[in-house]
Image (cartoon, rainbow, N blue to C red):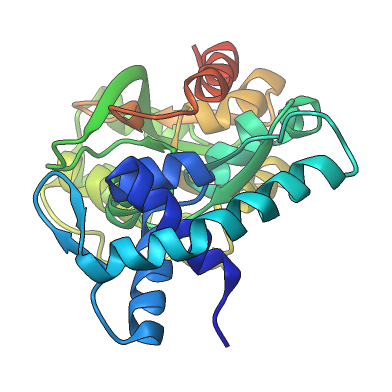
Length: 298
């Protein structure tokens, strides 16, 4: 059975001339628009548009279909507006990509106060960049930049990757070894400690180890936990060591429940960016999210 939304999407593409314009008019993603169009073309059995690099040009059969459904769709849209239970403007929805810990430490507590809807997506940064370019996401918080011409990156924060430990961890021996620049002694001491890691990406630990010791870590963590937040709770309750971004550890560091053991010989810094499309209909909502991050992190 044909889906009425396919006709609505077809009408929007016909009137705006682009998939992007239709997506903006309907408040849906561009991949969603493409899916509706391909489904309708499969249903009717012929092409409705010729695709060029800049515009969607209606075929003759597309023109016939548009003229045939226009009056009926217009009446349905008028009925929708007239009988809608609320006269308020539709609440916009934006989709944001970031890592779980960044969300929990910055945006989570603000969600109930926002005057718009938010969808949060967690995942790997390369996929987030692709989703942003495709219109699936509207904003991402990322330390990585891709080669997408339609995306804009705004730097807003630098994080340090540091070695942290529980406040109860005895660190005098390591501090002496560090002061004496005894690299082999540091390595031996670190390998004897209780280490925490995550089930996901251990890129922070690998980078820190290679940057300071010239090789990958040749041991496994004693405890594998779901995420960096879990590591912080474990360290706060006792002994142990982990490699962490300093801003995620700020609350526990301020409370004195954990401490920075070592920043390394050559501290590692990541620049965090707001990633957006160069053209968006959600500038006001994105500005609000940016202000929250600047308040919490800078």
